[in-house]
Structures are given as structure tokens and as C-alpha cells.
Image (cartoon, rainbow, N blue to C red; front, top):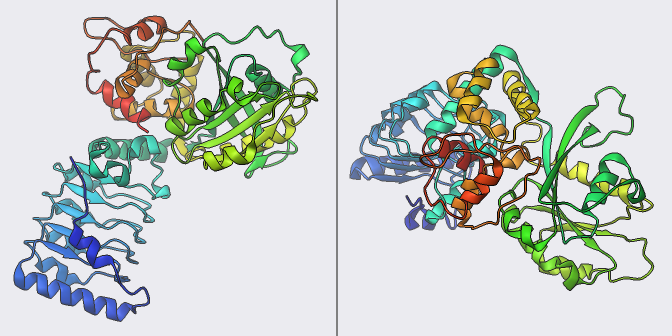
Length: 494
């Protein structure tokens, strides 16, 4: 389905005076409502008038099918909005709404509801009566506590049919079930982020991770290279938006960084794409002793831009900077070519040069990632922690349901809880969906400590190991059964 604002609406927006007084705006809105009532117009545009309130006369427009009131200063919608029973599209984004009226549940013909960029603190239960709703955009309302994995693509992403909107029922199920759990047992901040360490073989990725997380020098390690993918937890004490100077000080929180160390050998490159996501920190590690061609710097930066998106937090780490000779990268040229590049970090794992600075930068950027401090119901976090302690690398849906029942997580909460363990948090993944989405045929990965929820191919019984899941990428063309596809595809969209 394609979601487009009609050209006539966009044309009306051009030339609107921003200094219009609220009285003039209200009078203009009344005039437009009267004209629409007389002509029984199906579309009404009140966009950009500077309105602080919609006239209650709006309820007279019973033939109205589309209402555009975005880019105003509305704090509430009038209850008369519920009288527009023919309305199919309601666009109230970029206002100052703190709540939606319960009467909105009377708009039974509504198919598209745009409420992004407001100040909503709660949603009315009557929204669940809108059974014809096919698109619900609630992005930019942080007080609702809806993670991006649940909200799905923005309307800009969906526009033109590029991506599919998240089913509204899933968003509302998550919101109401999590809200109920949070009210009953309280919440805790998620405090978790994903750090992807990429680069060619033998540039020092594993040594860099050991230096950052443990303060170890290269000579203290028995580094034989990384086969496949290795994931490591790095607990970091933080205070405010920075690394804590004293871990025992009052107000110190623990941030967990999930470090992903990708084997640099070329045979693994196609499999890397299965685990690269948005809302993560990308560290592109280079060796100072190698030139740009040997470091393959353009390839890795393109990977980060492609899978991390235009807002990817990307740093180039020039490792082995203590060498007196070498080929440092042309930083200015790379900045011009890759605008998303945040900066360069110069480190040495032999004498730990630059490690402290790199640690501070990574922690600061991680705390700035979307959803890091997202409040989560305690039972949901308990389920996630139990999942992490499981020795198996695969999990059937039957096992997942049993775990949720043990932690007293209700049926409606299970899929929402599963999204908290999504690849964007750096904890779990489902490789078959990645391949389905990116049309990738990946080489099988060796067994590595990456917890994976493996869903069965048609005719197979879960669980099956990661190696078989990866092999299925090259042979199976079947799509995942619903609702399992929803549980994983929506957590990885982006």
C-alpha cells in the first residue's frame, strides 16, 4: 500500500505565514470548515495555520474522508472528532498533543492515523476498536515508551511503497500489555547497546576488544584470530551521559555493551550482513602499517552506511598507531566521501595508547543511541536475562513460551518481549529471515557463541542448530510462517 499526501495539500502548505495570530488561524479554520460543509468536500486541509484548537464545528463534516491538521500547535483534539464516521485518513503529526480523545474509537472507517512528532503520554483503549486501521504512526512520542523495533518504519520510509507499515494491532498489543506489566511490577531501564567491530583479518579487532573491555595488552593475549563471529559482554559504569570516574559513586548505572567481533577473512564477509543493523555503533578497524587498499576501508565504510543507515554511528579506529612507519588513512578525504563518519580513533594494543579516549567516546555514543534507557517491565527483563543464560544456541517457540510462562509473562506480551532480544540490541538473531529480506545466499558459519532463535523450515521440527539454519539459507526458499515472521521480521526491519 502506498501512503502519499495529495499534491493539493502540499500546494496549500506553500506560502503559509508563520506569524499568523491564533485568532486569525481559528477564524480561517472556521471558514474552511464552513466551505467544506456547504460543498460536502471529502478532504479538509487545516495544515500549518498555527492552530491551538480545532473548532468543534468540525463535527458537522460527516462526509469527510480525509483530514489534514499537521504542523500546528494543537494540545488536544475536540471530542467532536468522533462524529466523522466516514473518515479514513487522519493526519495530526507535528503538534503538541499529550493525549488522544476516547471518541477517536468511533472512527470505525479509519485506515490511516498519523500522530508522529507529538507529546503523547498515553493512548486510549478505544484505539483497539479501529479494526480497519492499516497504518499507525506514533514515532516521535518518547513518553509512550515504544521502542523503534515495535513502531516499525516511519511514514517517510513507507511513502512510495518502499517499505510496509507495522500492523497497528501489534503496536497496540505491545503498548497495552507492557503498560499493564509495568504498572503491576515497575520498570527498569534497558541500559544495553550493540557495538560492531569490523575490518580485515589481522588488523587487531580482537586485541582492541580485549584492550577496551579488560585493559589487556596484546602480549597478554593468546590471539589466534577470530573464526566466524564472537560476541562479548562489556559492563561499563556510567554516570549521566559519560563513563563514571568512580564506579562506586552514588547514582552510577551499569551499561552493557554487546561487542561483536567479526572474523575478517573474506569467506565470512557475506555472512556479516546477517547481523548488521541500525541503532548500533560501527567500529571500522584499520592497521596503520597497511594502505587503504589492504585495509579495504571503502568496503567496510560502505557496509556500515548500507546496513547502519544514514545516521549510523561510525568511527574508524586506526590501530597499531605506535608504529613509526606506515600508511595512515587520508582522514579529510574519507570524511568528504562518507558524511556519516563521526571521527577517527588512534589506538595501540601494545602500550594501550588511545584506549582510554576510545573507551570514553564509545560509551558516550552508546548512551546517545535510541532506546538505550528505554523503561522495560521487570518481568520482561527477567525473561531476557534467563534467555541469555541458556547453554543452547537455538530456541524453539515451545521453549520460548515455557520460559515466558515461568516468568509470568502473558500471551500478548511474548512477542513484545522477544523484540527486546532483537539483533538491534546485539543479543539474538534469526539468520533465515535476514536472508529472506536481503535476498542473500550466505556461506555456512562455523559454530560460534551467538544465541539464535532458530525457526523451523516447513516440514522440520525445531530446534535445529545454527549451522543447519545457515545451510538453509542456500537451499530453502519458503517464507516464514506467521506470526513467527512478525516476531522476527519486525524486530529486524531497518
